[in-house]
Image 1: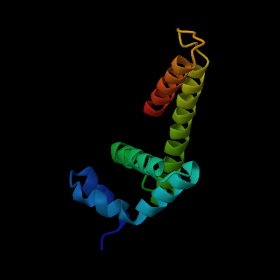
Image 2: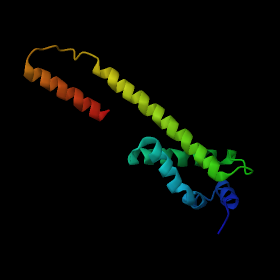
Image 3: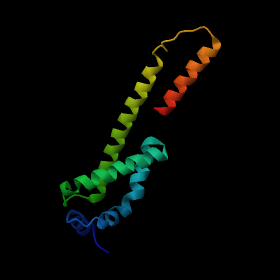
Image 4: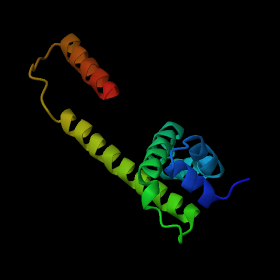
Length: 126
């Protein structure tokens, strides 16, 4: 079995199969951190995908004198924070949409119900 340094060198030399072998021991760690940050399995998988992309893109900047596991951990935490910031901004945008008038004020219960239903559909889509 090859060590991490050898696998990193192989990935940097273009052997992309070594990338899977390099990160295999850490995939559960990455997913667990994402889940602890979000409490949602699907969001944790999104964070994990972003982590893998960042590690792949920035592997050449990894300093071999540092611990690879710590680098992965820090990258995962940073990706999780970025994800939570984006989610927070998205939720603020949705909430701000709730305060806009519908553009059609009506006193008819049927019309008000339809407008409310449209708003809920829009929120779900967002």
